[in-house]
Each structure stands twice: as C-alpha cells, then as structure tokens.
Length: 448
Image 1 (cartoon, helix red, strand yellow):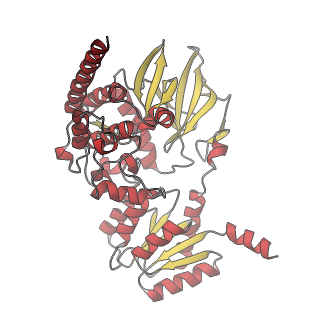
Image 2 (cartoon, rainbow, N blue to C red):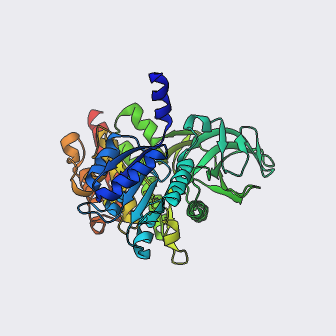
Image 3 (cartoon, rainbow, N blue to C red):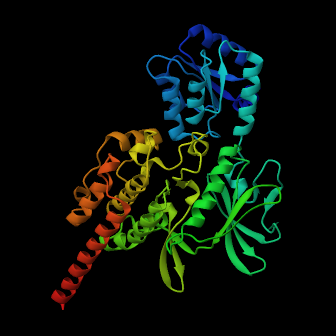
C-alpha cells in the first residue's frame, strides 16, 4: 500500500507558493492542499530560487511586492532557465496596477491574480496552466507530431496542402517541428517547418513564426538557408519550406575534434561574418547563433557554411509592433552564447550576434566555451556572462596568434559599443586568414 501511495503522490502536481506575508501564504497553502495539490512555500525571492534549483515544481504562485528580491526579479531569473510551458508562473499582487501587471506578462508571467484572492478563480487558473504545461514527450514527437490542438496528428507519409509529403522528422525546435519532405510537383526534397501550437499556444508565438518567414525571405545570401515557400496548413498552422541541407553542424564537428586550428576556424566563421554583415544592414538580428545553428552543408563535393534557424530572428522594423513580438517574455536563445545585454533584458542590436561569434571562436580554438557551469546551471552561466571576464585565449592555447586573441577579446566586450560590427569583424578575420596563409607558405618553402 505504501508503494501505491507513493506512486499516486508522484503524479500530483507540486506547486510552489512564494509570499512574504505569512498569513496569506498559510491560507493559500491550506486551500491548495485541500484541493489535492502538493504544496511547498517560500517566504522570499531568494528562498524561491533556491527551491526551484533543488526541486521540481509544476507551477509557481509568485508574490510581486516582496523585500529583497521582488517577484519581478525572481521571474526574470527563472525565465533564463525555464520556458513558459516548462514552469508556468502566476503572479500575485495586492495592487491592481495595470503597468505592473503588463510588465510581469512581458517578462514571462503566464497569468496574474489580484489579492485578496477569489480562490475558485485562482484554482481554475492553476488547472488551466497545468493542462497547458503538459507537453508531449519529446521522443513521441518524432513519430507523431501534434502541430495544433485543433489539428490532426502529423504522421510520416501525410501530405500537407496537396504539395508536400512528409517523409521523416528532422528535429523538434522551440517554435516548430522540421520535416524532410518531398515537393510533389517538383519531385524535390525539401525541409518543411511547421509551427508547434500544441507547445506554443499564444498569438505572440504565431506572430513570431510569421515574422521568421518574412525575415528569412529577406535574406538573400549564399550562406543563409534558402526559403522557398510560405503558407498555412488547411487548419491554419503557418509553415515555411526551405532547402534541404546535407552534412553536419559545427557542434557535431566540435564534438568529434574537441577544437580546431586557427585556419579552419577562420574558414568556417568568415562566411558567417559575411552573412551577418548583410543581414544586420537589413535590420535583422539572428539572436541564437551557436555551433548547432552553423551547418556545414555538402553540395557537389563542396563545403558551404549555412546559418540555420532564423526562427529566433528579430527584424528591427519600425512598422512592426515589437512589444507584440516579445510579449511572451521568453528568453529566446542559449545562455552560453548570449550577449550580456540580452541576459539583462536590455535593448540590443547586431552587436549581440557578434558577441555570440566571439564565444564560438573562443570555443573553436580552446575546445570549450568561456563560461561553464559543471552542474548545468543556466542561471549561473548567465551571471558569469554578465559579470565575469573569460580566461585569455592564449592562456589556454599558447599557439593562438595574437591577432586572434585580440579579435576574440574585442568581440567579448561586455559593453556592445566596444565590440566590432559584423563588417569590421569580417575584415579582421580575412586579414588574419591572409597572415595565416602567408605563414603556412613560408613554412612550406622552409621545409622544402
């Protein structure tokens, strides 16, 4: 019987109540426990972050006005590590202040409730967000992908809009499922990306996906993935069709080799800097540059570097309402490669991409990124990105040219104003490659 009880309790959602007012906290805890939930309490923001790091919760009820760390600051810290679906957060406030509520929602709150609580409403909202947070297991998505809660399950072999036959799942990303497909009229293999509204249920996410398509179509460069078609499925889910790539990512290459030579690193990142020079001029910021988004495409025996997944790209376009594009409050990107200004929720531009290029160069030469949490703590990595300086590259790899260390050092400046632009970086990398080539030629002649 004890084992049965344990299994049942494991299936009961575990909630965290964060409130500095002991009376409010205790009343809410008792009522939630009577409703059948497992409940843990935290009396302040610091304790809440400690508990979230050490335990698994399905939902957090978070007071806004607290001494020390406010609920807003706790929310920002949690959203670095967890998305809206991974850990729903309902903000609780005693002040019916529209500006404060909007700020919380912009930064990643799923919902809010006003004190004194109308408990049936609180309970109904908790139940709603718990249902929304139960995402389909990742392994199951590779066989059957639910693109929309109102749409049919997408199966291998299904035909989308009488044009694209789905052949296999390439991968599942934050904003969509990517399939290898056949273009039926052209008999051509393509990649089809379809918005996963089963995981991303808000209109802001749909707008962001459509924005991706517009931004991607504006990029006409040999080192960008070519977008061939934009449309919506018969049930309304937007999708885009891209060229099919063959080869490996830079991340896979680094897993095999550990690190790369200066020459190889330059050859791979010069095309990236060339592409960024063009897209930044168009007002497009990638926002998620990292080795897994750098693809080494093989075509007719030639290697072509391709930057993939502009799904997180943001066009800096005054004709679009940027608030709508960031309304979910999700931290879009990977902290190990993200610029400090993004982690601090400050305004940013193409210089944020250049910081990511600096991180990649550092990793390609040294074998690891400059800021690492051995425990896999994303919040710790984010704090290091904001406040710590990396170990100098030549301290880890003494044979690194001084010019390379200088380029990396300038790219990793905390202040974006002190970083080189994509165009300046491209020029510096090309000059260094010329130097490396000349040195290689002299060495060959000397050996000869």
